[in-house]
Image (cartoon, rainbow, N blue to C red; front, side, top):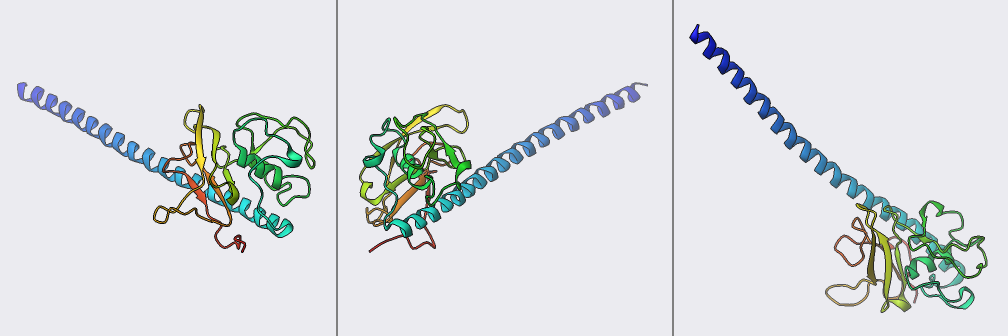
Length: 218
């Protein structure tokens, strides 16, 4: 009888150990699964952001064909003064490309956002709304845009943290070659996404290279 009780207890103890081992293994597998899926999702968002950026690049190319110059990245002239000093380059890109009959007319509606929630003081030709939109990446944050004339400028951007939804204020700068310290696309333009963290000037920024498009002018 005592032998039977001891054997039963041993079997119960072994079963409990097995159950705990299975739980540990499943927890480890779940961790790696979530980690890998999260990494894959981030890479997918980066690729979608690059694809959207290339669509903007093509519209810029059409604008160059029509006007002989890249979209400007400063206010003035018929636009007047900006309502604030935030997200300027992206807003200039919107005003240039998305006006009626412009190169991006009707092409970028799904990319429009207004993270800083500002408006023009008066209606601009080619637009019905006073809202001053930006062209945004996969995370809903504005692409930073610089015409080569404004490469030395430091632009303040208001973005949203994709993880928390909290606002981020950061500085966008035209990018330089680390070896030569010369600006990339010195006679062209730069288009940059703040990347997965939503903050400009960090390692995960996503520059949109105008590959396969003859953008530089003599």
